[in-house]
Amino acid sequence: MIIFCILPSEASSHQLDIFKNCLTENSDMKKKKFKNLGIALGGGAAHVGIIKALLEKGDRPAAITGTSIGAFVAAHIAFGTSIGELEEIALELDWLDVTSFKLSKMGLLTNESLGNKILDTLGKVDIEDADIPLCVISTDITSGKRVELSKGPLYKAVMASSCLPGIFAPVEWDNMLLVDGFLCENVPVSPLKKMGAEDIVAVDLTTNREYKRPDDIIDVLSNTFDIGLNNMIRQQIRENDVKWIQPSLSAYNRADTSQTKKLIEEGYNAAKKTLADW
Image (tube, helix red, strand yellow):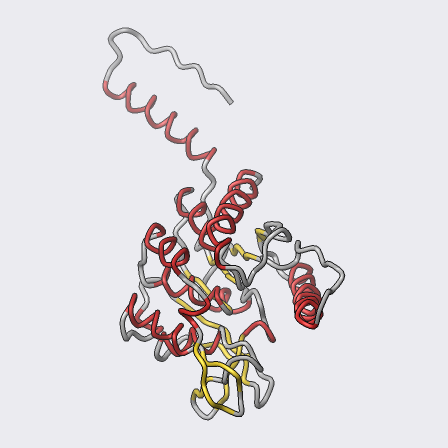
C-alpha cells in the first residue's frame, strides 16, 4: 500500500507529527510482531540460523524450550549469548568436543564434555536463573515418562536432554535415569503454553528429510529414528495451533560437523521465507 500525503510548505509541528505517526503505523503493519513469542527447538545446528532470522525481525522470545541439541541452543539464547557468539560456538563444535569414552554398562560413551562446554561458556548456572524462561525436555528411561526440566543445574539438564540412549550413559537426576527428550517430544511445544507463550514458533528439522535405501545398519537405525519422529511431529502439527518452520535438510549428513555452516544458512533462509509468508 502506498500512502500519498501532501503538506503545505509551512506545515505546523502538529501536522508533521500526524504525518510521522502515519508513516510509523504503516511500517508497523508490514512488520507483524508475535505476541508473547514462544520458541520450541528440536535437534540440529540449523536452529542457529532460524533464531538469527527471528531476532533480525525484531522478535525476542518470551519463553524458549529445547530437546536434544536444541536444548544446547535454547540454553545459550535464554542466558543471553549473542547470535554471533552462538554461531561461532556451533561452528567450532565437533563430536570429539561433546563425547568421550566411559566404562559403563549403560552406554558406550558419555556426553559429559557437552556439559563442560555449557560450564565453559555460561558458567555453573541454574535453569531458573535464565534471562528468558527456559525449559529442557528429557525422558526417564526407567519409567518412560517425559520430564520437563525448568529448575536445577543447566549443564546437567542439557546433557540429559541430548543423551542418546544406548550410545551415551544416562544422566542421573533425582533418582531418575534421563536420556534424550526426542523419545517423548522432539519439538517441545507443550511446555510453552504453561510458560505463558501465546504465539508459538516450532522448529522441525526432521519431517522434510527424504529417506534413502539403507546401505548398512547405521542407515537402518537412522531411518528408524526418523520415521518415529516424523509420525510424532505430524501428530503435533494436527493437534497444535503452532507456526512451524521446517527446512529441507536431506542433502546433509547430521553427523558431519563440517557441514554446520551450510546447515545454519539453510535454517536462516528457510526461516526468512516462512516468516515473510506470515
